[in-house]
Image (tube, rainbow over all chains, first blue to last red; front, top):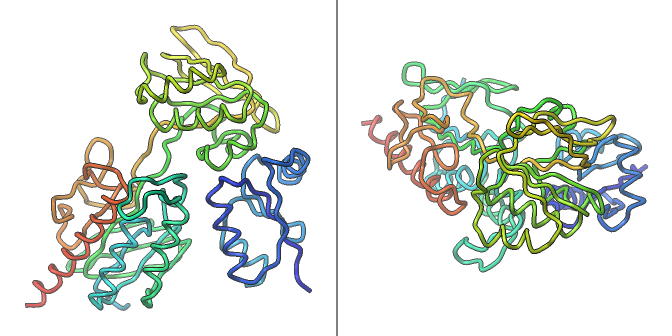
Length: 78
Length: 303
């Protein structure tokens, strides 16, 4: 079954764009939240990750901070 | 072990352009890099790269990457080089994942943000301390933040922050701000910026996230409550892994106009060197020069 992927991002963040295009290139469906527009989501991200940094990517509960291609590939089984 | 013609370290504008030239010259080469794009990938707006009136860093890097990837380039990503040293006629390269050999090397490892060196900085990294205002500024809506560094990149961060944060403290260790006056005027006009010159950051404090900074000014210390700390105090070259190369007082690798270092066969290009003009377009052209010089070196030594 496909893993559930959620990307916490902001519209201006270059690594967020890179992470999103990486997911798209690999045909991974993901939910995207813009934490600069959505304070509740920002709060959720900070609680879940303990960090104030984007992108933060939640792959089935596993949190990956930043655009860490290796960790992301591993978590997604690519 | 295969001894290649060339190993390129780094894949920012200098390294990518060096690769394109090496591929077109059909050199047997390898690229080892931490990431693709380097500092260019996190540049927000680029308005001075000829041919593009406006392009963002990630978009330009994507185009660079496409250009490189039309060739079958052997590239090791997410790999950190730990040592580059010439032994005999061969350049030895060690990384966190392996060892490689080549007859020439181009060091194009670029620069990274300089750290403050204040207590608590490391602990609160990504917990309020950030080195990428472009990335993280939107997370600090309606709270107070501090920007450290009164140069152009500091003021750039201030101008991004005033759109979001409720108040911005600009901290500069020197008596004067070095930024362009036009930027300082814009910052002052916002009415949200408080400028602290001759002020040093001693400590970043907090619990789970940053809650403030302790600063000192003429012997007196003061606590400034902030949720975000944007560090913008310049850059340092990534040159600590090379052995036997001459560097200047800023740790930049010294090169001549052919991108040659003091060690024959080892070349360097872009922001890691002492070249004048730390610009994307300059880094690209330095990458070209380095590959041409490496090619020339190889053809001369074959004779």
